[in-house]
Length: 105
Image (tube, rainbow, N blue to C red; front, side):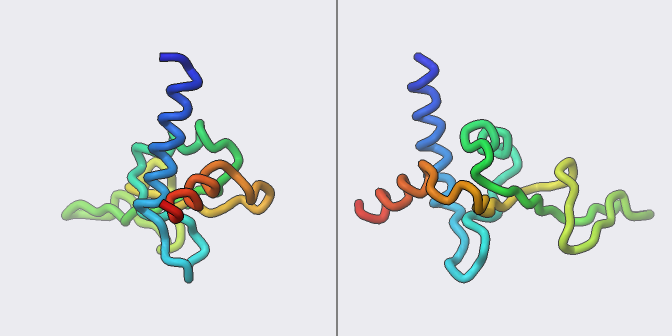
């Protein structure tokens, strides 16, 4: 399989994932609760298109806190999911065209 075909398949998969995890229109994020295993794919196939916010819980064992965090902040290493926000400098991107096409179908 050539590199272009792999890239097109990955783009379609990621655009469908944005559609699956799409946030309500009243929120600023485009998609939320996307599993962390997909963050590198998003960063590779949509460079500079999104801002990423990592989400997760504080972790404690029976004795003490292992990772205690403020509610609005989570380190990437401890995150279980992430949200994507549009980057204002690149409004028109291929994922928006794909989502508009999906609405027409």
